[in-house]
Length: 246
Image (cartoon, rainbow, N blue to C red; front, side):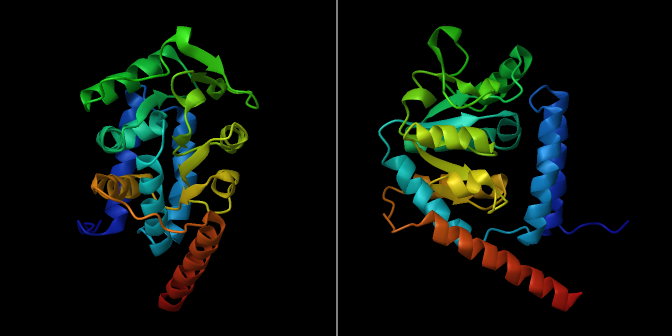
């Protein structure tokens, strides 16, 4: 088998798979999370496995929203913790955001594993672990309805990566601004969020950290619906290029 060059995007995809498999073995990732990643990987291929112009615009808007929020929260699930633990902490520090663990397939074992890797990466405070501060969010049937009253429940801006549509809709109904990563620009989550970053979360988080590190961010006239339409056109153009080169 031919070796894959270090600069080839396919190598990054393989490394991500390995991180998730390791995360599964270490109780971070649910088996359903592996299936969800496979679906996302297919969309990433359609994007050409690179960050598009529309995604970069969304990242700039996301950095501005987080930096100017009154009470921003980064919601963390198993896949996110397995793939971007250091970036989660860096982003929280640069944007003064809280970190909250919120799981669809929630178990104490998974919570402890996610807490461990976040603390190892530098987290000082992690919400979503204390039952005494828990409260139920209306409009959700899954375990994700249980949130921290000092975190997601009282937040004005929530970063919800790798998200399910039901919770995104419920959070929006709770009058919160939602930032999400979603490789499918047509998903309910992508269409519902205020800012959708159509990109692989590992690439986008690095760029979001860099953007948030800047002392000032420009308040661009960002429109999520328009940006999603641009991302769909970018996918179409990429497919046309691939077809010509086939």
